[in-house]
Image (cartoon, rainbow, N blue to C red; front, side, top):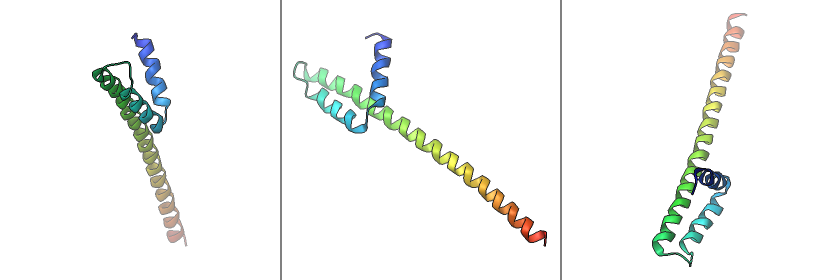
Length: 90
């Protein structure tokens, strides 16, 4: 396979749902026209796609949590500042 074909296949795999990737793994394992070793080799490619998809989703979740943490820090600073203003400007 040429690199362009591989990149296209990887991009297609990354767009698939977890369910579809699991179906693909089982489908690769049960392919009739290949040897068991070839079936396992092809299934391993799909398993790596599943792991990569999980990694991307995990990274997105981590970035969201980090952004929420920054937002909470900003809100706490605002609330603390307003509290000091109310207390000391009486």
